[in-house]
Amino acid sequence: MSSSFLALIWWVLPALGLSGALLYVLWVTKFEGKFQQETQRSVGQFQRFQDSLRESQARDVAADSPQSGLAAMSGHSGNNHTQVIKPDSEDDSLDDNPFLKKS
Image 1 (cartoon, rainbow, N blue to C red):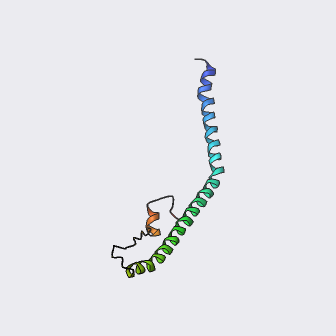
Image 2: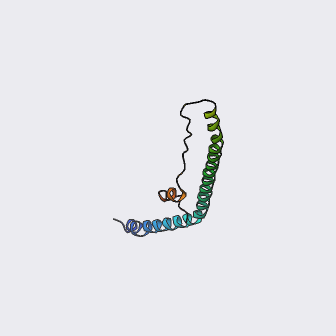
Image 3: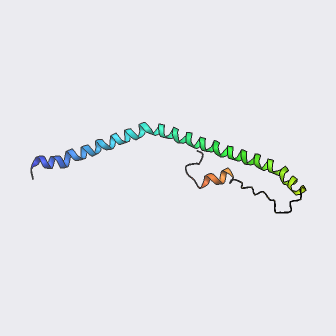
């Protein structure tokens, strides 16, 4: 083997690998803050969406309560139960998902 080929293997390739790794680390640290902010914004939007669902569910349950009394007075003898699906408590729901844990 020629000495230029050995120099390519033992000096140039590791130098290219090291410089590529350093550039990758710099690129990741430069964009990490941007991605972190976008993630926090997405989580915040999702939590607001969940809150709006909880509020609308509470309004629906409150609105259905007087109607069930009226239905009983009108002679409906059927099973007139409103099933309410309650969300998990906030502490329990965040334990199993590492992306939603509050820091």
